[in-house]
Image (cartoon, rainbow, N blue to C red; front, top):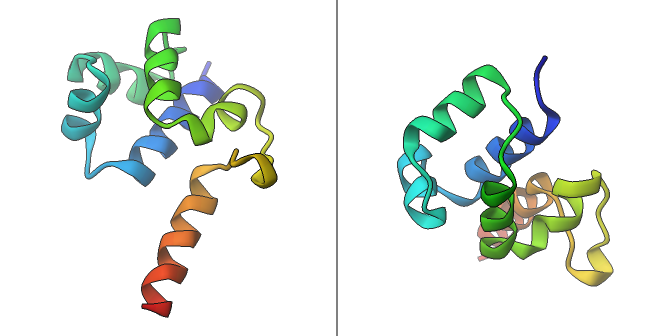
Length: 91
């Protein structure tokens, strides 16, 4: 059974870092832990989720509920990627 939380953590990783090694270094988790979670869909532990939310608080609502509220700064990774792409086009 694949975890929706594992998929969401991966989307955050892809939006915010250059890869697994950088993500693991930033949040302080073993690369094998992240690899296992992403490859098997294992449900992330609470401490990993807490570190992700502390590091990138803008994703907390989406990570935990699947909802966003841009007026409160709560977005999903797709919104962040779109913002960056629009910023590059405008610049």
